Length: 336
Image (tube, rainbow, N blue to C red):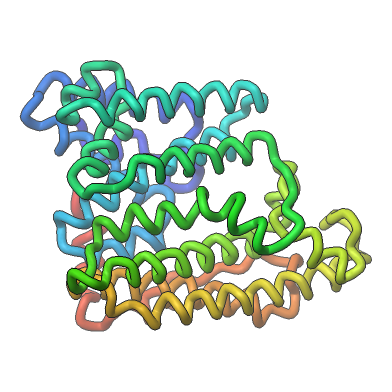
């Protein structure tokens, strides 16, 4: 059997060769033992989450196992397209071609009955697993199509004039629909609470994406991307963002701090509707709000702004997690 995380490199993102190798080996094992196909792919989806997001991996440990498995499948299915546009050394046309092929495989996976059937039809293993989750949880298939469209925007970046445009034209596909995926897995607290849970997910998706944007302004510019709304930059005297220009830093930092305040309000609203989710999902969602909210506060309170990339030390993440759940964390790191 394939050991979990067989190709994991903990200190750097996987390159395209590693992803391809993982895909080949996992799919081969999944096809060889049909009864274990889902378990095989699911184990590697967990390894992807562990490798790429310490914070999210931690908070998902507080979910019941059957929900946690589905969340790991969702993460792997969104991680790979994100890597195509963020880290693979490809031209824009090559990135778009890969995304087109990926989306075509998603359509095939939706029509398959099982993970094994999808993989046997040539579907990448993580898409095969994700499609199974979409079917079982009743997730509207259009949500993932919207996600891929957002990734297309990253392949050929554009600017956004207002915060409203940024949310509607990019954050909806890049983050809000991912929150909707999770909401279908987490479940509502009652038959009439699902719509309120979706509102909470929307607010949390906006908050998380804004926090990531604000932390990565310089890195995003190096990739040819500017997510800070142009109208807000112009209001601070920044006609065309250039983080290398020290004269712009004061204005850019004011935009960053203002958007961190917007994100903080979105975290607050997400938390206010936390009771709309099923009781066995709330601990994980609250931990997510608390961990990432703490990162957002560091950005909002930073006097250095662009001078450093904000992060939350592991000890601080640990402190905001539920005390009664601490015992799960060491076991989570040892589990394969």
